[in-house]
Amino acid sequence: MRPNKRKKKPKDAGKERNGNSGSQSNAQGTNPDLARLGAQLGIKADSKAGANVLENRNTTVREFIAKNRRASILRRFPSEYLDKTVEQAIRQGGTDVKKLLLDSRFSK
Image 1: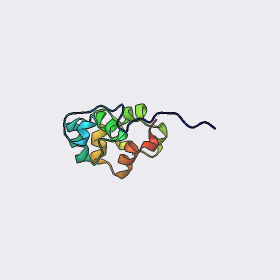
Image 2: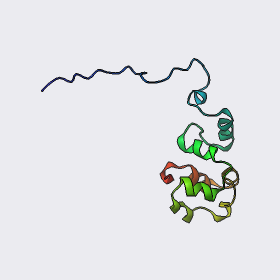
Image 3: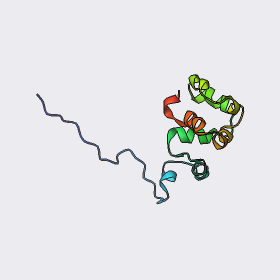
């Protein structure tokens, strides 16, 4: 057998260095306003699903589900929130609403 001749990359190879010593959310490109809103709603703005919900907070839940979630969640989703905005549904709805909109198991 031949020994493996691959070169090892340094741990930070290919990563951009940012001279700012700002918060972690800014280093990842999260908008500070969205991070603040996420904190108010109890959503992690730096997660993929959380950022997606926060960016689409002004669309109706029905549109958000059609574009970003599996249609099967409509069976469990409370119908009174379908015509509200995503932000209103998260604020007014219970844990089921929040879970169905945020959990990555239900994403397309």
